[in-house]
Image (cartoon, rainbow, N blue to C red; front, top):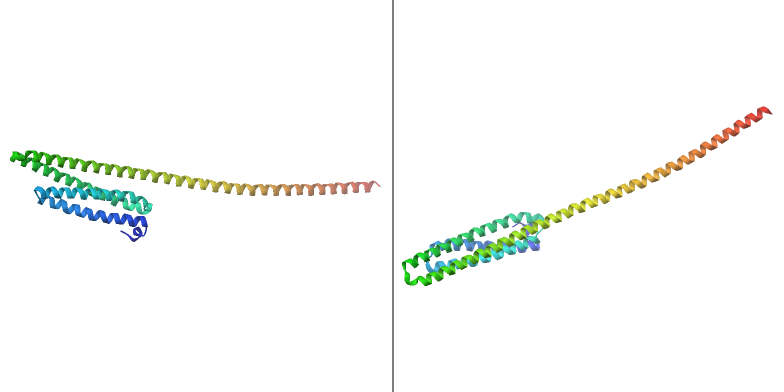
Length: 226
């Protein structure tokens, strides 16, 4: 895990869950490798131990799925593929465990055929194994459904947040454009007012000059007729 991830409190908790998951996954792998070498009660005990380990890994994976929401989005996008790989590996281990349970059930059936005196015990064991396998499959399916819903909800939330961010940016750009337009309008009004004042002044000067010229012309004409 990178130092950047470990520096965040939420990331440290996720890293702790991840380390626990890796230990449990290694334990599951070891148990699955030992099951084919066992038979009878030791094999049943190994299968039950592997089932408990898978359940523990499921719980840790669920905690990791929840804790990933507390990690910054920039780092979250890098961790999600790793989380999906963990879930895929756990599914493979779960299916392998189911096959071992089915093989044990099949061996029990063959043993029942060769030993009719223990038929009732074999039937009970078969029912217990089938019941445990069904519970394991149901719990696994619920976990997968919960994780899928959580991922879909997170994607929808991220999409909504992205849309809101883009809309906020558009509103800010529109607000800035309106402010710029208002400033330009104020400048234009001031310029027009200045031009109007200059035109009025020029008009008054022109009228004064014309008046003076008319008076001069009148004075010249009057002076000639005297």
